[in-house]
Image (cartoon, rainbow over all chains, first blue to last red; front, top):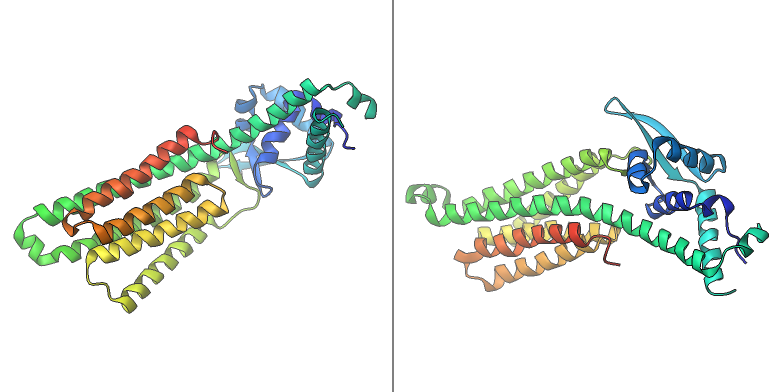
Length: 97
Length: 213
């Protein structure tokens, strides 16, 4: 039986993980897009990302593009595994297992 | 962890899965909107190109037509089509660096684009050399089919229904134009059945992208 992941279960973090897990594994998502898509403030999103990064689920990368600082977020193997397990657990609950 | 599981009922689990589904659709919509932008741009270039070719071929002064000939203008237009494709490829790869979703590793997308277009040109030149097409229309149709084959490959690689559908549709309309349409109406046919159809797929991608599974 799969387990619900307490870290990912939080709605904002679930959406962050779902968005990042939806892109190809070789790709990363811009912080600004996540902020706009989730409707969160810089601070709030930053706190969630830091939490997910500290769990080893996400990788944050700060680089300069055209002399402007940008933060990109990508999923790790551990994050993808944890997300898949969380989804499996949700499906098991719905199916009454 | 097990204790926490027991507190979640099927309603909140379903809500969570709905959030996940919605997020996946958001990413699909984002990708489709981006694809749509380029299909519209490229489709309009084609539509205008075919319109100008038609106007030139059938309305330009006799001495100019005699100088270049109908085939000549098709060669020029096909060459311009090729140049426009290369420029658009470079623009797409440059633009992709500022997109919300970018590759983790630095990719040589500009170089890859140039290699891809160079391959199209080489294949087209080899085809002209071996098959010796008798008209400018044949060369133009061949070039369009070659370009649209790339769209089909991209569509499969990226699982993009709009790229794939536009590639298949325009190959079919181009072959129809070459085989079944009177040569004097070929450009008008291609303006509508290639240029505007391509732009139409772009509009559809922007409207329905992310809504279609």
